[in-house]
Image: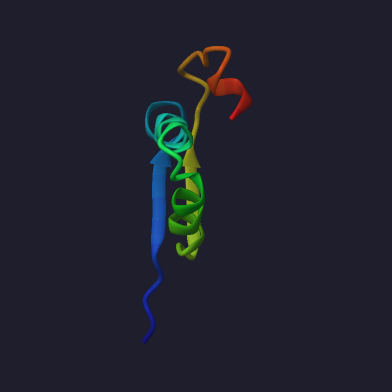
Length: 58
C-alpha cells in the first residue's frame, strides 16, 4: 500500500503570503520544489477574501 502526500492550503491566507516571503527571501526555488513534491495539491479558494494588487499577480 502506498501513501500519497496531499497539500490542502488556503490560497489567499497561506499560499500567497508564503510565496511572497519566499520571493523576498530569495528562496522561491526551494518553495516551489517543496510544493512539487506533493502528489496532490488542493488550493482552497472560495473567493471569500479580496486580493490586494500584489497578491493577484503571484
